[in-house]
Amino acid sequence: MRLEIRVIPNAKKFSVSLKDNMVKVHVNAKAEEGKANAELVERLSNWFESPVKILSGEKSRRKVIWIEGDEQKLIKKFKQGETDGKDIH
Image (cartoon, rainbow, N blue to C red):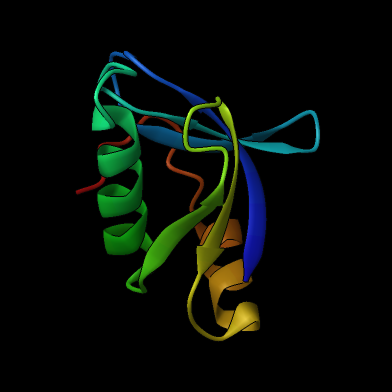
């Protein structure tokens, strides 16, 4: 599943939410040396229980990511639980 997101680095908590028709992902890591991207991929892969990769936007807050797996299952997972600031590993 292809998904456009906005990443907010250096956040107090990792969270995923839908705001203004945009998926926003807050990551703890700073946007330096790929740290925020690495956290983004690792945490989302764990949360969706599927491989995640960045398709575009490596050096931007706006990114396009690919989440491998059944699209309906992934959408259901997202609707079930925006993280609302809950820590996900």
